[in-house]
Length: 103
Image (cartoon, rainbow, N blue to C red):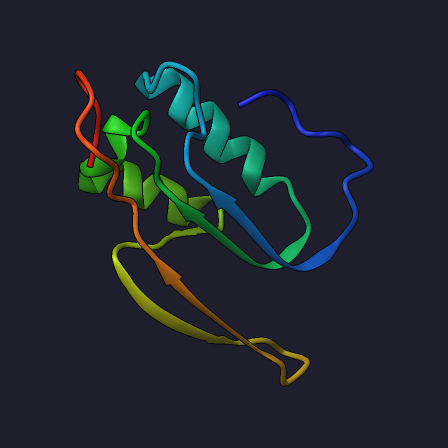
């Protein structure tokens, strides 16, 4: 993930859908999670893409949580924001098998 702009606006929900990194290395994954953690959002969600091989392991999921990012696995989710608004989403990280890929 490239460095995000410093003037990224504050938001209620930030949703990143797939491929946090270009190469899926642990270093790139850690850097991307830290970068997302800098964003000002009440709710930060991410759906893993096929490059996120490290996120199949519990260690990386805990790193995401440490940076305020919740990874969504297959399923339906409902979040309630502090404003009283609700955010409902169906997530799936599964992609067709192509080479050495996650999920």
